[in-house]
Image (cartoon, rainbow, N blue to C red):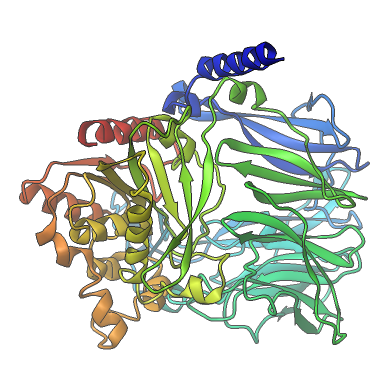
Length: 636
């Protein structure tokens, strides 16, 4: 028996040694699974598989169906449609679509036709650009048209002469406009504000348009924050996600149902720890499934629709484990299909048995790939903070981790700032990729992350450079006490608010770190306020404009402004900046690089002129990752 055990252990070790580590090039071989929906007969799940084509800098896509009970996938023909088209009204008489409508003159040549070669643009209010595009005078509008035998006639604009967008920009899609089950009404999402008023507000509303009368009514006029993601059950009860406060993009996100078409009922308000990320009605329309952050993961929940009764809604957590539920595809009786990731695995589809809560992997698109790739152990640590709290910190270890060795270690700073740090799988900031290059990664759930209660999440607003910085340093200081951490080789990396964190820590880290990488980070809060297009964010989180005088702005533009600590910079720093990033505009990265160069600090600028706040193209992504690890190798 002893010989057998030794033999099995030896075989397992050899298998582990034979596995390859994840590299940037291998990361861009991973196929990306996206659910489409359930077939009309409810026997199949339809999904797409996107395969990176690095040489042509694009993705190729195919659609598949797979039996709900599991089995072999079958590729669908390009025109083969087996999923219900929710753009067609339930009675089959009309079809919904969106299109751009030109409503305003922007270009110089539009104002002065005798100057056709002019490329001038003329603006008289804010919202002149958003995310990565300049305002061009065109607005997204919702249309419906008669539909018969697969053909439609000319559509009718349900927002005539309205200078507002539905779907909302920049990320809104088909989910922003839906049919009522009676086929007579359309519900859509819009922020009906214009210019500067639009730029400072988050007040989207749900509007209901009657195709017979042409009358539109605002269903959520009483709520001043976000209203989004409307869904009906078969009985015609509307549900959506809502935030309360105008101008606060990271308010607690709750799940609302409209009872009897008149009375909004908040199903999740009584749970301070619940921040709903997305949802879907149950098949019988009596409850709703949703996913939300909890304990450093995204998990699946179910809540009953209590209607107008005085009963407190019962919220039940259906899944648990070191993984993220990232979407709900469909329900068929006792099977719920969801998408799931973890730090070692990109999204695949799973079925959840609603009776015994067991999960079974449905798609296996990347199984063969991952079988050849060594996994990284992820571990939860609870770290004491400087104000007496306990903070969850994810620690990700290199493959074949040996605690008797010493490893260079990276402090990862999450963006957002109010976004959960969970078992996500990113094709940019990929923990498995970082750890596979031989680094331990320390990823704190610092102040400003949902899933730990509203107070924890909101603590970062008006205090970007305060307690969160102490949380970062607490995390790296505690983990650095481990014998396997090389305290002389600590690095700090992050993007967006994480990039701000890097710039801030570079001036206050007291020689903890040997190197920094900041991607699209805020370097100067004053110029950020003067150039970002998302004014509601800086107004709320900064406490106002730099010319306002209050305790919050004094901190934001004073001691918590990274540019005011550049005199303390003494550590190599790499700066990444997207040229089409209007959220954290180009002057942020350029100012930081210029400051580092003029101070004689080893520094590098990676400028990506065609990228926005993210790096989306395959070849730019590979350049980014190669430069990322090249810099760490040089400096750490």
